[in-house]
Length: 83
Image (tube, rainbow, N blue to C red; front, side, top):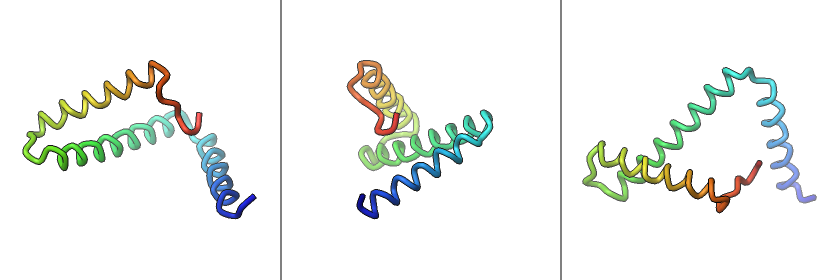
């Protein structure tokens, strides 16, 4: 196995083992933090794409995009990289 792939697998394995030790509350808090970070990046992208959009319109576009992602996932079009 090549060193880069071996290192990546070792890092992933370490992250999984650490995650398993977290309490349910800690896992939920991390999930919320990750979601807020992801939606923040999405808002930044929307602002860049639509520079004149109001905060309300940015939130509408974000909700539309999240809804589209949900529908894609529900129809089995999207598969997570790490199940």
